[in-house]
Length: 131
Image 1 (cartoon, rainbow, N blue to C red):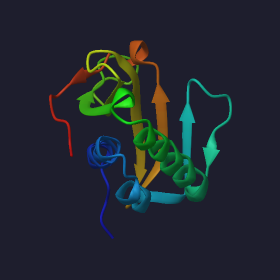
Image 2 (cartoon, rainbow, N blue to C red):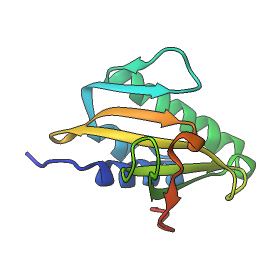
Image 3 (tube, rainbow, N blue to C red):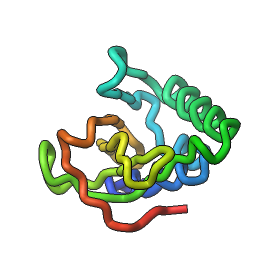
Image 4 (cartoon, rainbow, N blue to C red):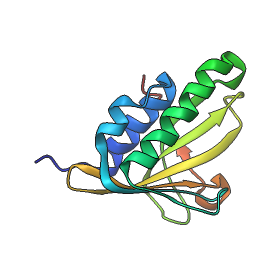
């Protein structure tokens, strides 16, 4: 059994958003994965719920075309949870950071995903945009 790292989870997540294809990311979700967003009151719990949400969101963005273009860059946090691997998300404008995703991993799976307000974490991009 391979141990997943936060950095690897971040890279697979970023690649999924840059391709708008969640298939490889879904393979890393554990049966009890939790997805939380600071913009939503209720968490998504379980692999099926998280997979359905991500696949649906990406399908919607694919259908919207280029104006909804998402860009996902690997980065590190500098505040809140300093020096954690993260994904810096932009939509529409490459310089307009809309969210930051953090990960918690356990064994070979993503245990938890937290979509956060960028100002709380002050992320610094690496320049790496996995595709």
